[in-house]
Length: 186
Image (cartoon, rainbow, N blue to C red; front, side, top):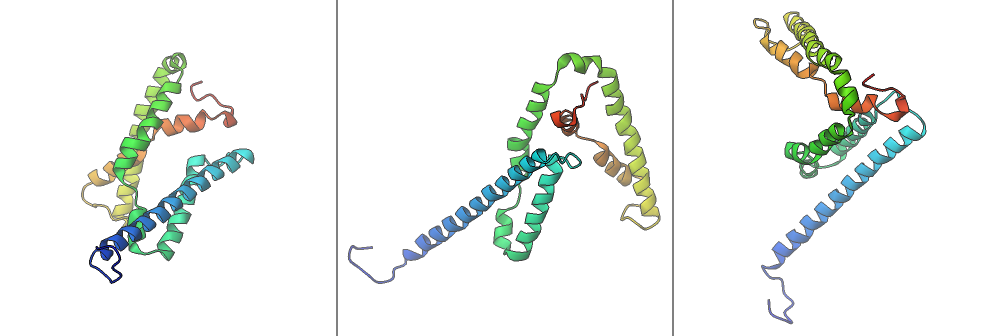
């Protein structure tokens, strides 16, 4: 576009789209920062007022559910797509520090002293839980209370295996919190 011209040109449209996209992303990143600040504040208030009946992670999930409900009620589809959570972000960015921190902060001596008990709970407890949940789900399907295959219990047992595989990192982090005054490996 030449200097001094003041008419509408074809080049204006991409620039306006760029500014609109930039403004949209800036507002949504600000929203994400506000949401994370709310989650940090909830965790701080829970520790300050000694609300130990609800883990921090559960409180943050409740905050996310509330904000998600509000976002679904008052925003359009484009913004909801922006707020979606990608599995790659979780697996490659958020999960490794959680796992490495739990392994790094674990006391080796206490771990190996209690290894038999840990294996017993990990293997046998998970197997018992898998079969109990799996067959309970299968029976709910037989009684037409759950949409499960009535002829073959394999689907229900797979569901039981998925649900029964308790995250040991989360369990250790909850049990190892200093506010509870309990040693998870004793």
